[in-house]
Length: 171
Picture 1 (spheres, one colour):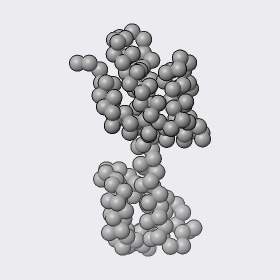
Picture 2 (cartoon, one colour):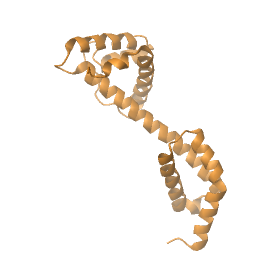
Picture 3 (cartoon, rainbow, N blue to C red):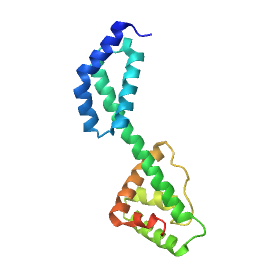
Picture 4 (tube, rainbow, N blue to C red):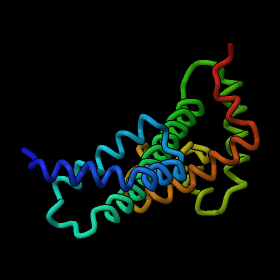
């Protein structure tokens, strides 16, 4: 159980740091519900590490910035993973509209071929554009980091070219 003076010092810290914490969250454009979660996690961590933290306000601000960056990295990974899954399903599915699938494969191949060489070979294998399929899951290894960068570049080009509109199923 927290001692009363520890409770007071945490509340005082929060009161002192509140404007700066708000600016950090605004700078990183963290949605309000997620901002509350990040702040709660930072302060819970501080409670457990309090005896190792010499400058709590500086520590809280630095940790919150790190948490904001991690938040957007996680969101970006989910976005790329969803894009990847949708592309794989759309170009590799069996049955359905084969003309639509073939048109999408051609469009995807054209966009992939506009990317830098390392991304071209990785993505052509991944989506079976050269015949053989590449690895299914995006892993968290160094190759996964390259895959993430390539998927980011692919997503940007697909948006610019309008190809993503073809992923929506026909109405």
